[in-house]
Image (cartoon, rainbow, N blue to C red; front, side, top):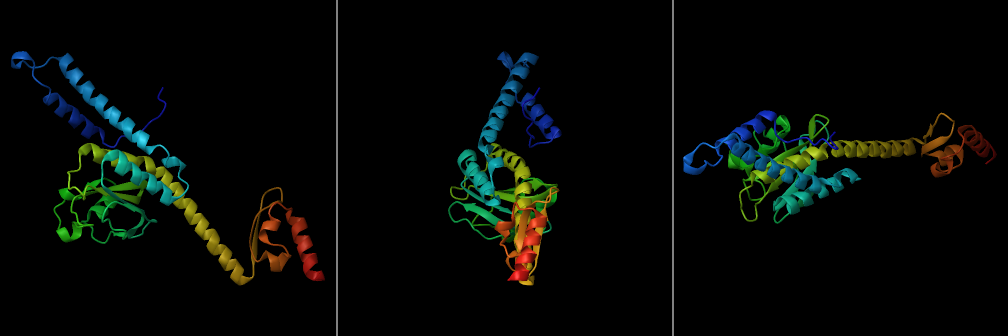
Length: 275
């Protein structure tokens, strides 16, 4: 059995088309003879072995993505892999919440790179097309006005969506805008595979940060209202305390955690009556 299943970046029909191309480009035998089946199989196997080695390279670059504890750290790891391992010269990474009309920057590395958010207002822009299709978009392949394509002094870059929960919640923009060297097919595939591997981690981290933000907002609201919330498990033990417990129960939130609910409330009410 397989130790691991890794999503491949290309549909089966694309892979089949490439195999047909490889067969058609097999060198002819001596005297211009058509190569036999063994020669064709050898040529194809060499090509597949090369792609496997490239896949292993990307897997090595992706190690540690799942260990990221914040969204910013996840994008920093991706950016380093794109620059160091895949030969790009500049990289921008950002994320958004569902239905947001822009990607907010998390990382921007490289000479002269912009740290501005990437807007989705132009439907024909590379970022908007990447979001709507869920596929990687090469800006140089689009027939749209330069005013829409231009970014940080270049018109040639890749926009790769990070798909999470069926939506593009992240975006990786990478280019070779310093030297102007063309983007290779292998480098583009590597970014796509990194984005595929990062999707699950991004969804989890965004959810965690959203929960933490909601808890902070709830705590601020409770403090302003002079109220408190106690979270109790099935054994009647307080596992979390928020709000103005000092005024209501005579003890600060951290002092209530781990206490039995009945005793904490009873002693708190008694303290308030006798104070």
